[in-house]
Every structure is written in C-alpha cells, then in structure tokens.
Image (tube, rainbow, N blue to C red):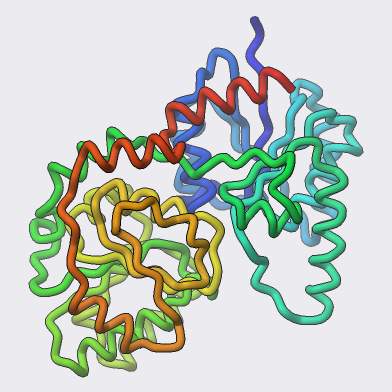
Length: 364
C-alpha cells in the first residue's frame, strides 16, 4: 500500500494553537499510511520545521506579495506535484484562496479546517472580504472540519456536515510530566509569590495590554507576583517597552517560545487568557490536563470548559474582577483519573484523533 500524501496549508509552523494541534496529530499518525507536507508563506524557519523534516515531512515555502499571486503560485505547485490528492487548509478566511488554487489544479479532496470563531476585523472593506471568503470557502470545500461548534458556525454557518475534531493533546504524557514538575518554576526562576502564566502569540487578539493592566493592579495592591509571558509576535517590542514605562520589569517576564510549556503550566498558580476572541484554544486543553486553573475572557467559546472546575470566564470590562479572582479563587485538587477520563470522553486524545483522521483521509 502506497503512502497517502496530504498537503497542509499553514502560515508558518510555529508553536501556536492550530500548529501545535497539527503536530500532536502528526506525531501519532501512522506515517506508513499517511504523510504530511506543509506549505508555508514565509522564508523564516518555523519552530516545528526541524521536527517535521525528522518525521519525514517537507516544508514548502511559497513567497508572494498578495493573495492572488499566492493562489496562482500554489495552483502551479499543485499541478507540478500530482502526488497530492488531498489539500487541508488551516488559515480561516484565506482558505477560500488556497482551496480555489487546489480546485484549479484539479485536486478532488479539499478540506477547510476552522480554528477560530472570528476574523477580528471590522472595517467596511474587510467585512466585504469576509462575506466573499465565507461564501467561497463553503462552496469550494469538499470536506469541512472545525475545532468546536462555535468555530464551525463561524466559517461554515452550521455544524451540519462538519466534523468536530477537538484540539487534541498527548494526554497521558502531559499528565505524567505535570505530576513530576510541580516545583519547576521555583527551580528555574527562583521567584516568590503568585505565579501567573500567559501563553500565545504576542498580537492584538491575545490582548496582552489587559494583562499589563492586571499586573499594574496587582502591584498597586502590593501583591508579590510574577507574570510569565510565553510566545513571540509583532507586539513584542511594544509590550516590552510598556513594561519598562509602567515599572513592571520585576513582575513581568518575557520567556519567548518554549518547549517546556507543560512544566511551566504544572508549576504555575494560574493561567490568564484575556483574548478578544478565540476558537477552541489547545492551550486550554493543555492547562486543564496539567491541573492549572485558568481565568479566561468571556469572548472565548464556553466549549473550552471540560467540567474539571479549572476554567473561570470573566468580562474584559473589569480588571478588578480578574485581580480579585487571582487572589481569592480556590484550586480543586488534581485528580489524575478524573482528568484522564474527562479529556478522553470529550475526544481530546491525540492518539485516538490521529487514528480517526487517518480513516478520514483513506476514505476520501
């Protein structure tokens, strides 16, 4: 039996939500049957590129100055590489362009995968583009996948004929790592007081500005604390300067991209996610797998609450509410068996989901 090649369309394979989900599946999928390759739209090296190559995949950069040129170059590549029978696109509204390229190249199986509940754009021109992209994406996709109901309704307008594929993690490995890493931050950074972590790209959607307001309020109340900001992005320089200007350098630390996310979560007191919008963030599956309490914006889909009493939704209207919760919330004791059962029941196991995806690819 020959190996089925699947071409995934991503921006760059960095340690972010959709990309991490993809890697969790890629590590566990039967690569004698299914092999992943990845089209990116940058010459920069992604965080996962080396591992992808080690697993037998390819990184294929396509450079273009605008979406039309990108679409035409992708279509040309697909025509020149007929071994790809399946194109799996992960870039929300841009999927309309990428799947159009696939259709133009004669690709029969075109998968659109929704990872978010909003595009976050509000100008008139961008709303027109959104309507065009939504309409064409729904028309051109031959198979639809979403990380949750809200993400499905945003990109496809319905959950009918949409596979809901939760953002899976390696549950057992995460739980085992968490159990042995409860003192990790103390050993790594030697910081006293309340330990708070925020994980995600440094961009507008993740709303780090709100996190700095939390830091200011905690400092005003003379709380001993550290916020560890994990990730990279275009807002890094601006945020770092704001930390200096607000005299928060002792309380806010930028850790960049990390491979020890599980250990950091297992040893933190809280995670915060004041995002302006999200689909189904894989980082919240990871945090609950480690037993970490998360304070989350009420703009994030309620589907992320896995019933472990580890997610609290709060309004972005009040910084004080977030600070009060950080200072008063009680942590449920970590129950390994309950955690494992909850995540498996709600289909967050990477091993099970990779087997499901294999069957989907094979049956297309």
